[in-house]
Structures are given as structure tokens and as C-alpha cells.
Amino acid sequence: MGGTVTLKAVLFDRDGTLVVDVPYNGDPQLVRPMDGAREALQKVRRAGMATGVVTNQSGVARGLLTMEQMHSVNRRVDQLLGPFDVWEFCPHGPEEGCACRKPEPGMIVEACHTLGIKTAEAALVGDIGADMEAAAAAGARAVLVPTRLTRREEIEAAACVAEDLGQAVDLLLSGATDGEPGGALAELDARL
Image (cartoon, rainbow, N blue to C red; front, side, top):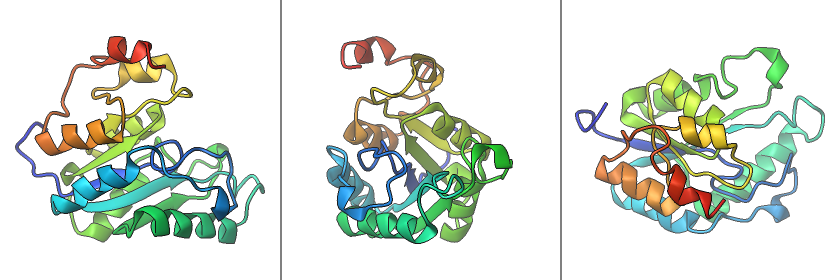
């Protein structure tokens, strides 16, 4: 993609990327922004780009939280870090074979449709390989921001890796998101 297509939106995974991952969280009081999330989002918005959230929420399908609980957590994320221009969520379990659950591209495609942009004009920032695969399948740019839960092979496979949300946004805004897979792995080893 390079610098030929103008970036118009940055989409973010929710848990482990924008907010601290609390597995199957249904309690808005447990929502805590990741370090640097507010500042990273401010940079994107100041650059005139749309922001959005695309999040797998299989806890709904698994019966671990209700749709209302999921929406209440999303509203809390929006209060703390928003407003976001678009929200997409997948309430399905991995065995349901839907087109929206990452690594499928459905949520990215739908978010871009809602924003009135092409998928090539969007980027996704996430913390696991499924986020990167979904972006690739949609034709969007992607930046991986690993956490302690990110598997080494996911880091090695990612075309663009950042040490935190701020660096991820800086890479996207500078157009430097077409790196070699695993290029930042050595630098991250000490941190992870």
C-alpha cells in the first residue's frame, strides 16, 4: 500500500489494546485505559482522521455476559476515550463461523462502510495475530502492539510492530507501516 493511499481512519481493538484486558468483562467499573491510549487517540483525531473500535466479544455467545453488559462496557470505553466515530462488535463464538469475528474481515469492512471510506484507507491497531489477519483480509494497514499475552509467532508474523499505542499511531501518521515481518522483535524481547 505504501504512501499512495491516504489514511482516513484508525480502528482499534478494544481489550488489550485500548483498555486493560479483563477477560469477558461485563462490569464498566473495571474498564481501565491502556497507558498512552488517550494521547494516541488525540493524535489521530488532531490529524483529522476518524477513530473506531472493532472488538470480538465471544463472552456473549458463551453466556458469560449479556449484550447489555457488553454495551455498558463499550459505553464506558467511549466515555473514557471517545467519542469514537464507529463501533463494531462480534458477539459470536469461534465455532459459529461468522464473517465478523476476527481474523475474518467483516467488522473492518462494516466500519469502513459506515465511515464511507475504502478499507485501504483504514488501519487497525491490535494486540494479537487475529487483529493483523483481519486487517490483511480487509486490505487495511495494521500495527501490532504486543502485550505479555501476545504469542511470539504473532509478533514474528506481523508486518509492523510497535512498542506502545503512541508509537503505533506515530508509525501510521508517518506512513511507515510497511515494514518487514518481525522487524521490531529483537527490541521487544527485553520488554516482553
